[in-house]
Image 1 (cartoon, protein in one colour):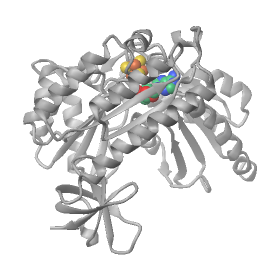
Image 2 (cartoon, rainbow, N blue to C red):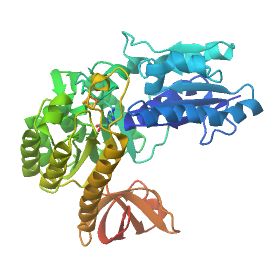
Image 3 (cartoon, protein in one colour):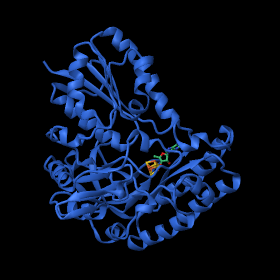
Image 4 (cartoon, rainbow, N blue to C red):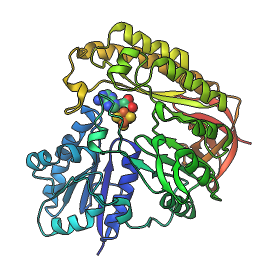
Length: 438
Ligand code: 5AD
Ligand code: SF4
């Protein structure tokens, strides 16, 4: 009899990829994935530790699962991902509901861990093992896929930004071998995938072993662009200091590389950038953006910002607003600084009050919101190519993404799913564009 698995994913796209691979690893052990926690034999929370709020969600979600466990004493509950890595032993101590804790680098061991759990034991594994987990995971099994997929090409980070837990929860930077990635990309395309987003905490630092020496991200993208049936390539998240010339050039001359780039800067103040250990100035970032836009003028730029980093004054914050005005973002994510245990910034003096950080966040988000609105509105009247993914909210509607990652909906038949079609944009709505098939 097959058992039912429910996986809930928090945080970044790398967690989305990991959740798929964990489900596949457990699939080999007889688990079939379902979409709701009700009726599950096993619930796995794949967690995020990046900010305090994200981490707290785990504990509140575990509280919500209690009635399910009371109704079904055989229900197994596992915690995976970065909270598991950082706080696994404490979770086991504090939450008797939890049967299993697995970190991001050991989930290839899940089937064996589940055997222990099925015997009534608790299982915890948050090692940073010698072996490559990907080499020990089952081959991609899911027979039919939607038209888009994520593919993790590198994990971990050696940058040690002063605020960030990633170097501790995900470990040192590791790039996967290029031939395996090419194989995985081909396997995805065979299953109907037409767009692949290459993932890494620091994806443009990719330097994997290739058949003829080391490949950088640009080489990997160019080789993948040679795969028939793969129409679109994206990558995320990048660090400004790893935007090398060949990657910038690829934005200009590789048709399958989409004109969208997420390139976080975090702050516009040189003093704060230095305190963050970002190792570049605001001016260097602005010059870099100019070079990328020279290669691809219509590129839609996205970013991440942190306000209220320790020591940030009103002048420093103003410098961030100035940078946003100078650069112009099509979309962006902005956060209040969250002090993370074990990171260098957590120990620093000059912590900014929550009220002040909230106020700055509001002002920054107002500016970024205006830019996002203006970028989206400027699409009206333009022709874009849309990769259709699913049916829309209204009957007869189909929804997909443009080259610029805008959600676009049109009136059209369901067999558009998985197709790329030319669309004229006719209106800009709150979070999407309305278009007409040409
Ligand atoms: N506090 C607030 N935001 C953070 N980020 C990373 N660590 C923290 C933190 N401690 C943000 C950065 C990063 C994004 C993924 O999350 O902007 O680019
Ligand atoms: Fe964290 Fe990104 Fe900085 Fe690495 S580059 S430490 S993942 S914010």
